[in-house]
Image (cartoon, rainbow, N blue to C red):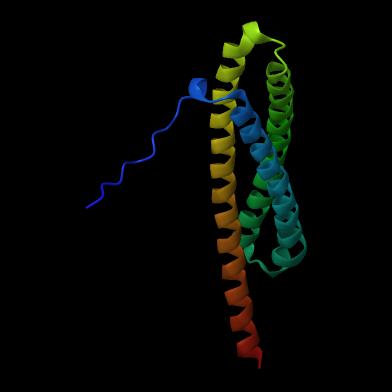
Length: 148
């Protein structure tokens, strides 16, 4: 029987600079896509769901809209930091800033934590939006069945 060994989490100091650069590009791509999703959720909530909400759900929708706006601002700030880090890694590949490589690697680890937190927060927010939309759709469907 073959034993499965869990994948070890490699410290950032063991990764090549090219690998770190590719990770930052992936982060930027994910955050850019989340921005599109955030715009969709804002439109969905503000134009299509709010009018169908009861008082309690209306407050929840407003809170979700506010949270989406807040997360979008955080995402933009995070994106700027990642882009700056990306430039520094590119310069490091060109053998510029060699003396500061440890600082860039530490910064990468900090950014990684921020990205993970940002993605987790967005997933939670997305789940809340889906739950509210699903609830409103069910209520709307019931209302239509009652009136027919």
